[in-house]
Amino acid sequence: MRAMVLDKPGQPLQLRDVPKPKPGRGQLLVRVSTCAVCRTDLHVADGELPDPKLPLILGHQIVGRVEEIGEMFEGPQRPDNRGAKDAPTFAIGDRVGIPWLGWTDGDCSYCRSGRENLCDNALFTGYTLNGGYAEFSVADSRYCFHLAERYGDVEVAPLLCAGLIGYRSYRKTGDARRLGIYGFGNAAHLIAQIAIYEGRELFAFTRPGDKATQQTAKELGAVWACGSDEMPPEKLDAAIIFAPVGQLVPVALRALAKGGVVVCGGIHMTDIPSFPYVDLWEERVITSVANLTRRDGEEFFEIVPRVPIRTNTETFALEKANTALDLFRAGKLSATAVLTIGK
Ligand SMILES: [Zn+2]
Ligand SMILES: [Zn+2]
Image (cartoon, rainbow, N blue to C red; front, side, top):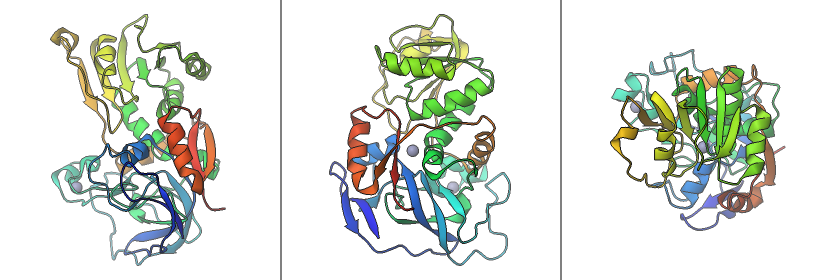
């Protein structure tokens, strides 16, 4: 099969013919239709995340169809760490979404306490497992999702990470009425729609001077949109930072009301500068969000068609994955890049 392979961080991906993977026990062999490009792919390709599997096929927002099903687990097939409904079942030909969380041990203290996103031994699609920049991919069926019919293969792909992990960040803001979002990219665009649907007042912060993105945020329903160097007119109950820029943490903290929370939604961020304790005082909180649980996915995909969330996408052929990554790195994409692979 054709795949775009990362041999070593810092080098462009190589188009290569590699053996088609075989589904193991409990795995699905999926014929990939689309795979959205995530900022995490950039972090992996650029060597900003430690110890990727090498060589590696990137990509963890995969949409495809089940081609083959490996031998299933005997008896009750799910560990009890799921804390939600039964694992989804799939038949040959079903459409399937494969996310970032690829496998957990079900047995560590985190899994046993409903926090499989923090599992000590978790494996991640397109990082420590091969992902979807390829014609086929295999995935443990217990971590895959069914996707709402109303969405096409291209438009649904960005929901699998930007949407899902954005959603986990959003949930960490509790019932914040005034919500700030710093870095108005893919994740922000999706989460803003849920926030507005749920009646939050949205304050959007973009790169200073980025009027186009501020306009987009206003069109989505933000009550205020400005550069991240400006203070909002009212104190925020919560702020999510999607930009990988540590300097924004003290900035967002200063925009918070008492008891407010700053949620860092990315997997990688530049260093956070020091700030006076008084900015954290009065029970303000800084937290990060790591990965996702399957329960997050079930909740998220339940709410998606109700909003309904719309995605903006720009498609690239599989062979053009390096172009998509380069444009993303340079901040020159105006929508989520989606690789179109199969039919
Ligand atoms: Zn675990
Ligand atoms: Zn991602």
